[in-house]
Length: 346
Image 1 (cartoon, rainbow, N blue to C red):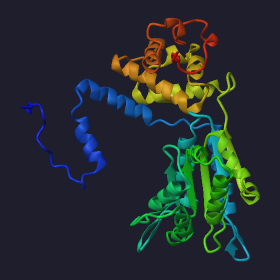
Image 2: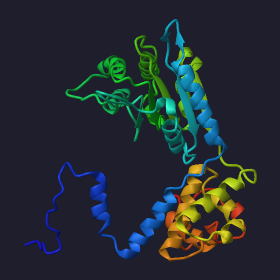
Image 3: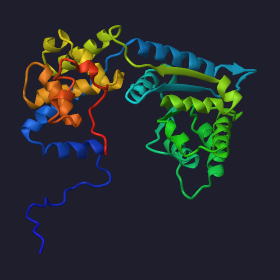
Image 4: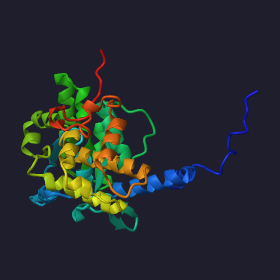
C-alpha cells in the first residue's frame, strides 16, 4: 500500500483561481532563505536599462504607425511590415514589447461595449505551419475556435475577424520558426499570399511587426509589395570599449535595486568579461549580471564580486573542474570563445 502521509490534502483551488494567487501559495512553501533570494532576484529583474537603441526603435515605430494610419483618397490603402532582427540574446522581444506598450497611439481604447486592443502579439514557440499561425492569431484576437479549419479557411476569415475587433497591428515574435517548415517554393508562396491578403484587405488593412533572427527578412523578399512596404531595425552586438558604459549602467542599476555594492566590479575589467560571456548581446548581458547577483544573494553578500560571477559561470556552463575555461578565473580570458563553455559530444 502506498504511503500517503506526506501528501498535502486537496486545496481549495479551482479553475477561477488566478495564476498569481496560485504562485503566491506555492512561493509560501519556500524557506525563509529561499524567499530572501527570490526577493532579491525580483528586484533585479524589475530593472531595465535603456540605451540609444531604445530611443531609435521608439522613433522608428512612431514613423511606422503614422505611415500605417495615413489614408489615400479617404481610406487606409495598405498594411506595412516592420522587421526587428538580431541574434539570440540581443533583447528583441523585450525591446518590441516596451516600444509597443509605450506607444500612446496604439494604447487600448475603452468603449461602452468593451475594451478595444489595437495590437495583438503571438510568440511562435517552435517550428510552425501557416495554419497554426493563423489559428493562434485568431485566438489572440478573441475568436472562439469551434471546429477544425483548413489552412485556406483560416486565412480567408482572418481579415474580416481582425476588422470586427479593430486590430491594426499584429506582432509575431520568433518569426524564424515560420520559415523552418516552409522551405519549398510552394510553401513560401502560401506565406506570401497569406500575409499579403491581410495587408491588402481593402475594408481594413492590417500591419505586422515581425521580430526574430536576421534570416526572417527573407519574408520581405517573397513579394515586391511586401518588400516596398517594409522597414527594418537590426539590433547589433554591443561593441567595446565604445559601449562599456552600457554594461556599467546595467550593473549599477541592478545592484542599486537589490542594495548591493558594485565598485569591485565597475572599477575592474569584469564588465568586459561579462560582455564576453554574453556574446556581446544586450539581453544576455543582463542575464549574466542577474546570475552574478543570484550568487551574491545566496551568500548573503553586501557587495557583488568577481567570485560571484565565477560561481555563476560554473552553474550555467560545464566549467566545473575546468577553471582554465572560466573567463572570471583566468587572466587571459580573451583567448576563450565568447559564450558559455560547453563540452561537445564526441
